Length: 359
Image (cartoon, rainbow, N blue to C red; front, top):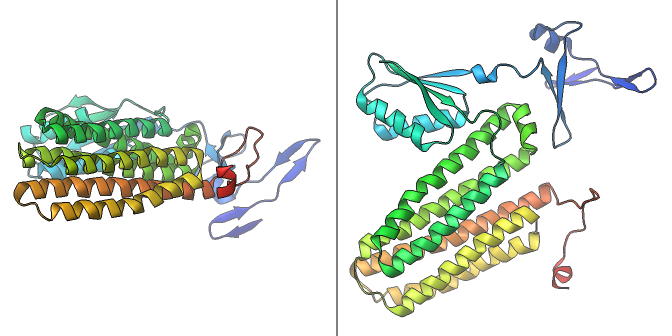
């Protein structure tokens, strides 16, 4: 046996004709109150490792987290605290105040439960509210959550530009309200990743590796940021009002929006296919977009007042969206190197060169 830095090495031994056995560290066995005859459970993981559990799935569903808050907390501060507790992934969350919970605090908790995916009010007392995660241990596949986020963000980008062109406050408000849907999907994905990192059984059920979880979490954060910039573009409707915009500038911004949206689509496809060449094309396109931005800035230099302010906001948000797509492409390259795509036979195909891609 070897033991180094907390890692215990054991030689595989063979008994009988075809059975392999490995001994367990005594300290691990005694710390869990185990003995001869007790049953262990094994979970193979997607990265090739094997996780050992003492007994069948322990009562994770019975975990209860008590959160002490005060009625004097700022509403935003309380809401952020509840989001952090939600992401931590406890099945039961009890929010408690010293003495009677104020109507204002209770309303923040109820609003939080309505906005998140999973929490439902289980019980209420004068001093507390208990939330239960009704989603449980069978979450939606993380790649599916990411695809849904992309669909919503893409629609928000399109509608934000439609609101800008038409100066339509109703479309702008709809874009702003939908930002919450993207946020709740991002927080839900973050919760699932956190739970998977804490419990190997959840990771195994997701059929993902730890690098996969990290990759999808980073990609989700990028999508959430792009949604924020769609909201910012929609917000320029109130700034611009009915101020006429030169058609030449509107056309230039429209083209920039289309390129930013196309870059996002390509970045996500390269993330899924692990296509390094296509990811590099997204990054190059984002850098080329800066030249178009400079041309628009020269046009804006002659404008004044709220027209100049509103158009500058739109321009900056479109540029940021393009570079966030570039960030996503870099994540795709990292993933392609970390876990190359495999063929149906399970072998890694040769990397595509520029010449091969052109052919």
